[in-house]
Length: 454
Image (tube, rainbow, N blue to C red):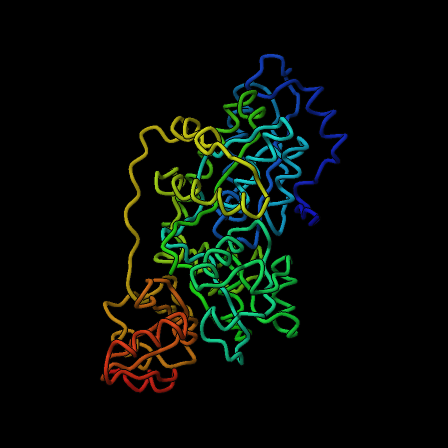
C-alpha cells in the first residue's frame, strides 16, 4: 500500500488519536452535541499526480477553499474544523482507508470508484459518488505507450509482449477493451504486470516491459520527456472516462453540511481553473513536481480533461458499462451504480450556479513569459506563429489528433503532409490509416512539418 504524504502545515493525526478526537467532539458541526471549542477533523484522500482530480485535491488544497468554507462554518457553530490531506499514487489505498473509517472523502478514477462501491458494500461501510472532477467523453485520459525506439505500430504488435498497468484502474480497463477490439485475449495473448504507475514507467525505460498502459498524467509526462511514444490513444474507444469524488455514507449522513462545504469548495476550485488555466498549471506543477507543460496538456483551456463537477448522464452510463469489465476480472461482483451515485449533495451545494461556458478550442502555443496561451484557427497558423516566435521562446505547442480530437504535444505528434497541409495524430496507427485513405499523403518528421509553415 502506498504511504500517504501530508504537508507539514497540516499535521496528520494518527488513526487512534483521530478516532479519539472525533469521539470527544461529537459528530461535528451538524450535530448539536459538538461542544463549543471542540475540534472535528475531516480527512481527504487524493492523488496529487493524477492531475484531473486537482479540483478535489492538489489545486483545491493549494487554494485553501475547503479550509475557508469550514472556517466560516466554525465561526457560526463554535466548532474548530481541521482538514487532513492524504496523498496516494492510486485509488486503491484510498478505498482501503475509507472502508476502515480513516478517510472521509476521496477522489479516484471510474474503475477504482466501482471497486470503492463494491468494497464499501461488502464491508458494510457504504460509499457514495457525489461529484466529478475531470472527464473526457472519448476516453483519451488513458494511453498505451511503448519506448521511443519500439517497432510496434499497433496493439496487434503487442501479442506475446509484457505490458505494465495498474490492475483495476481506468488505464487497465482501457487496455483490456483495446486489446479485445484488436482481436487479442488480454489474459492469454499478452503478459500483464500489475505495477504502480511510477514503477511501470521505470520498467518501460529499463526494457523489462514492452508497453505501459496508464492514466493521466503519465502518458503526457513520458512523451514530453521523450521517454516513450503513444501506441494507442484511449480516445479510439469512444467511451467516456472520468475521475470523481466519493464519500463515506456515514460521514455524509452525520455531517451533510461538511460534505456540502467540500463540494462548494470544489466548485470554486473548478471555476478558478477555468479562469486561470496557465496560473493553475504552474501551481499544480509546483506542488507535484510535474512539468507545467504536461499539466496544461490535460488541464488547460482546451485540455484533454474537461472539469465540471456535474454527474452527467453519459458518465453514469459509462460507469455501468465498466462493471462487466471489472466483474470479468473478478475484481467486483454486481455493483448497483444507481444506488452508488448520489447527486443530491452537489445539487444542494450548487443551487443557482449557472452552467459552464464551453472551453476555447484550436491549436495552442505557450510562449515563455506570457501569462496566457495563444490560440489559433488552424494548424498552419500555429506553425506560422512558431516560426515567428522562434524555438527558444516556446514552452509548448498543442494540437489535436485529426481522428480522435485528443490533445497532444505538437513536437511529439505523428505528422502527415497532405500536399502542403499538415495533419497531426497521436499515434502512428492513426497516421497510417489517414495516409492509406488519402493518395499522395505521406508521413513526415517534425522538422519537415515546420517547413510547411506558410
